[in-house]
Length: 158
Ligand SMILES: CC(C)(COP(=O)(O)OP(=O)(O)OC[C@H]1O[C@@H](n2cnc3c(N)ncnc32)[C@H](O)[C@@H]1OP(=O)(O)O)[C@@H](O)C(=O)NCCC(=O)NCCS
Image (cartoon, rainbow, N blue to C red; front, side, top):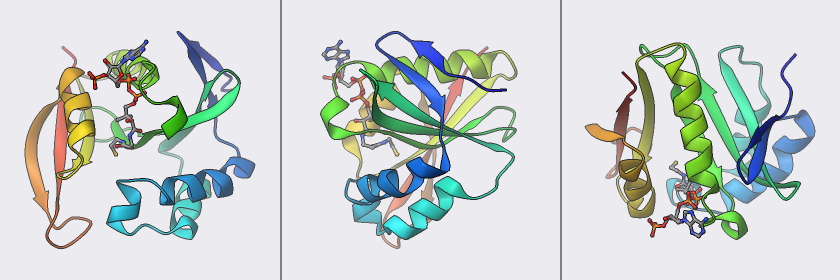
C-alpha cells in the first residue's frame, strides 16, 4: 500500500477522489491551465479517472494541500511529469524544488531519464526546470493550443 512520503518541508500523499474537485478548481484558476483553456471539469476528470500508469500525489505543506504531482510511468525510458503545480501561497519556499528532487531520485532507481513538458510562455517554470537540470529538447508546436508550443524537457539521470 502506498503511504505518505515525508519530504524536507512537506510531504506527498496519494491523491484521493475527494481531492479532485477542489484541486481542479484551483488549477483551472491558475496559469498555465487558465491560459491554455483547461476547464475545472476536465481537470477533475483527469485527476480522478482510472489510470494504472499514472501516480497522482497531493503535495502537502504544514498539513495543507500545497500542490499536486502526477507522474506517468513507464513512459519513455523514464517517467514523465504530466502535471506539476505548487499552489500560489506555497510557492517560493523551496517546495517545488524538493518535490522535483524526489521525483528525480525515484526515477533514477528505475530509469535513466525524467521527462516533463512546459508551455513556451511559462517563463518562470522554464527557469525552474532549467535550474533543476532539465534540458529543452523539442518544441511541440500547437500540441495544446494553436500558436503556442509545449516544450519537451529531459533530465538525464545517469
Ligand atoms: C514552477 C513551480 C512548480 C515552482 O515551485 P516552487 O515551490 O515555487 O519552487 P521553489 O520554491 O523550489 O523555487 C522557486 C523560487 O524559490 C526560491 N527558493 C527556494 N527555496 C527557498 C526558500 N527556502 N525560501 C525562499 N525562497 C526559496 C528558489 O531559489 C526560486 O527562486 P528563483 O526563481 O529566484 O530562483 C511553481 O511556481 C508552480 O507551480 N507554478 C505554476 C504551475 C506551473 O508552472 N507548473 C509547472 C509547469 S506545468
